[in-house]
Each structure stands twice: as structure tokens, then as C-alpha cells.
Image (cartoon, rainbow, N blue to C red; front, side, top):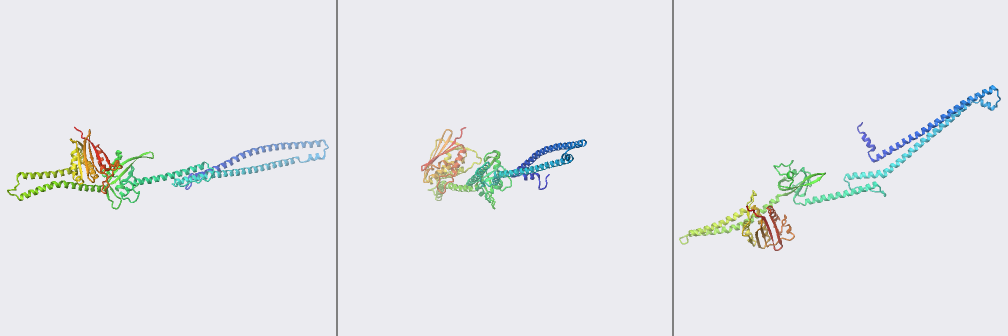
Length: 574
């Protein structure tokens, strides 16, 4: 039965809760068992001996009683004989016959029994002394054994237990001091425990260093980065992500839900509102890219557009395969500003070219009209306009207006974006000529001569007009920038078996040898001027070329110029 504050379990723990108590209980139990066993053996042996002596005494007493009875009978018989026969006996014999022989015999018997009782009592005292002495001896032996066990086993084990408890609490710097010169198994256990603590401490330091290196590594990534588990919980973020969302303190995003961290929502995003990368990847297991609207955590709660590129990775934890999501988040604000600047720059460039192209025909039209007005104001019979002259003037005006319309048509065609993304047949030589007409003013201004080597028969590709123009406008403008002091731009077309090849070659400064293998990588530019390019032009060109199963290659020699070769599959003949 259990009572308040007391139970058999607590009582059992009180006596056997520690190894020291167990040893004490075992030694005490052994002592009482040995004492009880010794007492039982001693009592058994002594009782048998006492019983045997008592039986011998009884026999002696019986024999003595028989002898006394016989002596009394014999004495009476002798006395009768003496009296009947009136025999003469000596005084000594007469005194013997008259003495109380029975009383003396009883006294002798009593004295004998008293002596035997004294002997037994002495024997019992000696036995008790022997028992107590043996018990004390056994007790001291057991105490010495307990002290030896405590010194050689319990105390070292207590140190091991204390150290293991401190290690479990994270105190990996603790060590057990080994004082004995002759080590035993427990000392070897302590030594191994010290080595284990040292290894754990070193491993923990390495893990912390790797953790710091990993965090520093992802913090060095300019784009925002975060890792999400299957439950929308953020596992890790970098510094750019925290700065992007203006988080109050470092590490506050870890453990937060992704939809709350980036959208300040209290529940997961609905598919009708935001395309969730985690849900999309859980459906098909493929990387996903989308544009979302994030909200900052500062007082302004400003919103901004970001480009989210998400990819899954799998990790086995606790024997289970779990999926995590890595999101690379790029703020589009700067890109939009940069794109706007590029558009303004391109608009200025196109405006200059258009102004130049339109100025000549409009100037010619103006001169013709001024001439006509002057002739009409001074018209008389001598200088009257004939129908033929008026027709010639009007034809010239029509030609110049046609040139203006052609310039605006080329401009509109280049600016046209096919939102339906339906490919059309693009004739290589015809489209390149139209591009060169738009870029002719810039070439003349830079002192660049353009040479074309076209095959007699034009060939065509199936692609978007805007993509084809973007590819070669980029390549030709790069060639212009490479020839700052003027030069020659050569464009060559060649029809191969199943492909069409277009080569754009310049005589500019060329590309450095160490830069050549990386020329198509993002943010790689060979321009050294302060207003140099962004390093994305050739990356966009290669992406567009590859999207139509084409190929682009470059060869260059520093100081002599560069040559870009682009090939596309020809349009299949029906």
C-alpha cells in the first residue's frame, strides 16, 4: 500500500538507488547470512555435543544409582549376617557398615553434576565469545572489502557518471583526472571517455565552423535565398533575404512560415492569388519559376515584385526521405529601372537614326515644295509650270514620302512583338538588310564600313521576327562598340546542308584570351569604358539561339577582331 510521501518504490530506491547502496546492501546481506549460517552450524554442532554429553551423564547416573542400590542391599545383607552369626569384625569394618554410604554417594553424584554443569556453562561462554569474535572479524573483513570496492570501483565510477552527466548537459570541456599510476579497466574507461569528450568537442567546433562558413557562403550570394521544408517552415535564409524584407533582427525569419515571412499572411497562399512554388513542385517535382509580390516588414509595409526561382532537393533524415525547397529570390525593382534606362537609351539611339533617315527625304520634299511655291508665286507666261515639270516634282515628292514610310515601316517591324508566339518564315538576307538600314547612321557616325557577302539565293528559318532581330542587333552593336576608332564590319551568309550560317565579323579590339571561354556567361563584359555593357547581351543571344535549336560560336584574337558564327536549322521544304 502506498501512502502520501511514501511508496515501496521510493523505499526500494532508497536502499538500491545507487551502485554504492547496492554494494552496501549486498555486503550487509552477506554479513547477516554468514552470521546466521555460522550460528545455525554452531548451534547444531553444540546441541548435538550437549545431547551426547547429557546422554553419557544419564548413563553414568543410572550406573551410579544401580551401584548405590546394590551397595545398600549388600551392606544390609552383610550386617544381617554379622548379627545372626555373631561374627567378630573389626571396628573399622563395623564403622563402615554403620556409615551412611547412600548419602555420600548422592553427594558425590551432585558434585559430579555440578562440575559438568560448570563445564557446559564455560563451554557456552567460550562459544559465545567465539561467535561474537567471528562476527566482528567478518564485519571488519566486509568493511575492508567495502572500502576497497569504493576506492577502486565506486569512486572512479562516480567520476565517470558525473562526467557523462556534464557531457549530456553540453559541457564538453570536462575531463577526468587519472591519479593512479597502474591503470585498470575503469581507468581505461575514463581515458576513453576523456578521448570521446575531446573528439566530441573537436567535432562540435568543426560543425560550428562549417555552419559559420556555410552561412557566410550563402550570405555572400547577392540574390535573396531561403530554404523551406514541406510544412512551409523556413529552415535557413541569407543576409540578402533579411535585408530585402527589412526584417527586424538577424535570424528572425528562421522557423517562420514562408507565406507570413514574405506576404504577411496568416495562412498558405491560395492558388488563385499566388502561384506557390512548393505546391507546384509537389505536383510535378520539377523546378519552378514565377513572379510574386512581396511585402516588407518595416513600418511602410512596401510591396515590390520579385522573380522567384525554386528547385527541390531531397535529404534522408531519421531514415525518412524528406523534400526541401530552395528559392532564389531576385528583386525586380533594379531590373525594371535598368530596363527603363535601356529603353530610354535605345529610344534615344533609334530617335537619332530615325531623325537622320527622315531628315534627308523630308529635306528633299521641303526643297521641292519651296521650288514649286517660288515658281507659282513668280508664274508668268515665260516660266509657267508645264504638266511634265509638275508631274516630275510630284513624283520626287512621292519618292521621298515613300522613303519616310519605308523607314517608319522598318522601325515598326523591328518593334513589333508577336504576343501569340507564332513562328513565321524569316528570310536571313532580307531581314539583315533591314537591320543594317536602321543601324547605318550609327555605323557612318563611328566611321565603320559595312561589307556583306550574301549568297545569290536567300534562305529562311522558322522563328519569331523579333527574336531574330534581337540576336543580330546585339551582335552588330557589340561589333560597333569593339571598333571605337572605326573599322570594317563583315556579314556573310552561307547555306549548308540542313542549316543556314550567318557570320558577323569585326576588326575591333578583340576579346582577351582569359575572357573568351566565359564570354556567354552572365555579367561578363569585355568593355572597359565606364558606361560599358551589363554583360547580359551575349547571354540573351545564346539563350535565344539555343531556344531555336541553333548554335553560336566565337573566335577572336586580341587587337585583331572577333568573329561570331550563328547557325539555325533551315525551314523544311513542303
